[in-house]
Image (cartoon, rainbow, N blue to C red; front, side, top):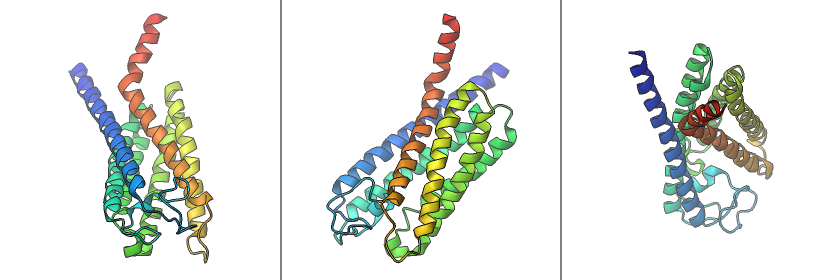
Length: 237
């Protein structure tokens, strides 16, 4: 009976990891397509041509009219779909990451609850572009960010206490958490400024997203292939 339950659990974890990976790849493809057709403009230079990775926020691409004043109806739909795919990947991530907690039942509950609340808040962000919804967009982003940071903090803490393999994930997670916290602090600081936020704010968002993606993909790889590699090393010994 226990062996049957373990097999079913392992199969569910693999499906969760595949969902994470597939949703992230869909996000990447849709985001690249949206960026390729984005007419141009960012908050520091509205006359800039095309999408500038470290100067544009992710949500700039979801605007139906670009910051340069050109129609972006198709690109905005692609960008919205991209960010929704990322939300699906995040949901799978927060469900799967407790797999590597040792004796962390309480941490598992907190990570999953906070993580799913963060995902629900985040999913509303690309559907409420600031050009139409004003500060609602910014406050939803802050809510999602705060919940996500809380979930990530719990996850990093639980991983660090859970052995060598988990500590590798904890290290990547700590880097993503630091970058995400920096971006949140900068975003709040410049939120109501009279001048556009400096380049470091959108750049910090992209660095945080890259590190978060590395954390997510590392978890998916470890779930799909890591156990096999560990068992092979044990056999070789």
